[in-house]
Length: 265
Image: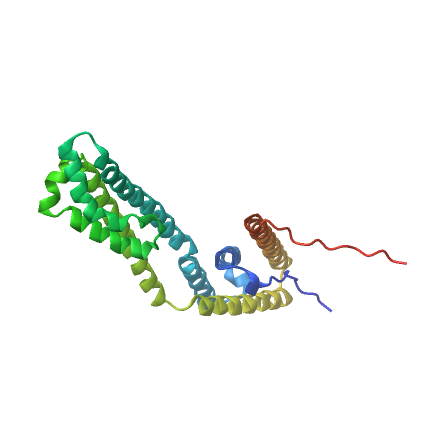
């Protein structure tokens, strides 16, 4: 009886979106590198798999979302520092030996004292409060006070940083709306996995029907490359599990219990 090629299986369900997308992109590329007459895979099926694999890459937006989230976090920290600086100057300048500065500080303190806990607020609430703070400080009656305390540039910087943060926030919101209009990630993953299983069966059938040693050798080499890819992705998966476990232990200050082998009689 003629044996067919064996390709190591991979538990695709366990992979996170990034690893799942990486597996399908690389596997698809490996298969498409071999002549379709050898693999006996219909072009339509190969093209559909290729499109799904690229869609997975696009939708694995933990990456893109993280870019926006990280940038927003940094920008929020910048605008909070700028606001804290202004609030601190207003507070301390009430002790100035200059009478005009004291008057200006007292006038502005009436406006700023309700915003002293900005750092402890959620980002959404902080955004709302900063909008109010900037609006109040830019009122014409406060222009002279701001100038007298040397806060004109600081207020302009705060307004700019807050605007940049809001721009990032809108970009992330638009990104999420765009994602919702695309097929759900689970649906795309399921379609990719079904095609991959079908591709494996077609490759095994192609090996059984191969009428030349050259074709069989090429299919054997492809099977080895796919098996090596599976092993590599599995290793990456185990490494990511170990890293997550280590981060969790570091955060909680605990260590997961180790298995103890009992002596055998």
